[in-house]
Length: 199
Image (tube, rainbow, N blue to C red; front, side, top):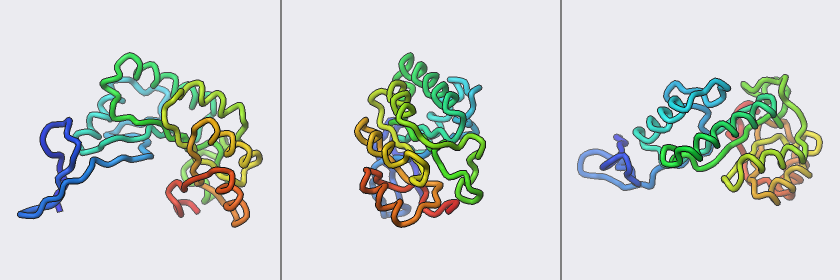
């Protein structure tokens, strides 16, 4: 099966198929892209030209929209990365149209071996309400997905407050039990991040 972008780079459809059969599909949305085309989105040394190259490469490969994903790090470093990207987006919004929002995956995850996956345990910690306030200040009205482990202290209150602020909460990198799962869903969590990976 061949998948290719149809028409110009501004296409809104993918043509899928070969021979006489062709289907038109909406361009895909990916809620978790940590880097692309050799560009690491986690780097504090990321350059704007490299970021734009990654997005142009995604577009060439048929991506519709994506969430810029930042994984576990010192919280202040995550906020610093977001602020830098926001400056670039404000300066050149046309170059950043592919980016639909944010996915903050960590540091509020399980630091147990296996469950944490590739995330560095030294930065793992419990979420605080002030983290949400700080995050909201830098992402503004951008759609934002936060992945956390609901067994962390304060998690249920943070989930409720995050939903009130307009964030979406996903559960992941977690050693949760059934009771914690039920409480998290009741508090407003609405999805799983790569369910089963590292669990």
